[in-house]
Image (cartoon, rainbow over all chains, first blue to last red; front, side, top):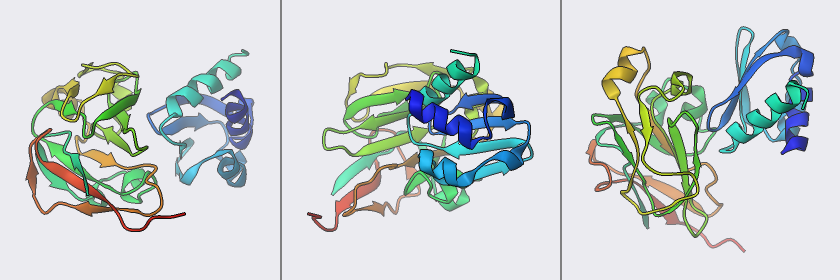
Length: 81
Length: 156
């Protein structure tokens, strides 16, 4: 899970680019500093399903029914864990 | 044919009419939505409650044969952080089809500005399986099938 979390962080443009991130049941919902830094190929390689949903600085990424676990892991890493 | 019972009592609505691209574009697989008239969500199949989100707005049940059903109560309702939702089962529980999983307050959720259309989808349907929709326009939770899963070919 930690490995997956790290891959999503990198695909989202790195930890400095993630302002806030939450996990719904199947998708990660993030607010980004610069949405143009998102690497969609890397998102797909990390396990993204379908396409990212973008709204301004916000992005939603469908990852499967374990999204809350991944989000928890990402937030642990973002807080320096 | 395996019946997927309706988790909700209410009106059947095609996924195309759900204003959320993740469901309307079938990113999480085929399914159908219900506009719930009552505030109870039951297990659509017998199986393990593999995920029950901490906000109590969505859950997934996996049957012994690997069939998985995702039930999402309303749209974007994760933002309510559990307000108006109460869990009646625990993640990891073995549940029977028709068993109540979440109680919710439709009036309160709608009043908070959320759409209560509730998608029921099959996220990891194995190859060789197909779903069939029901013709009913109104369904009763735990009693009426909402979908049927059929084997169309035996792969391998």
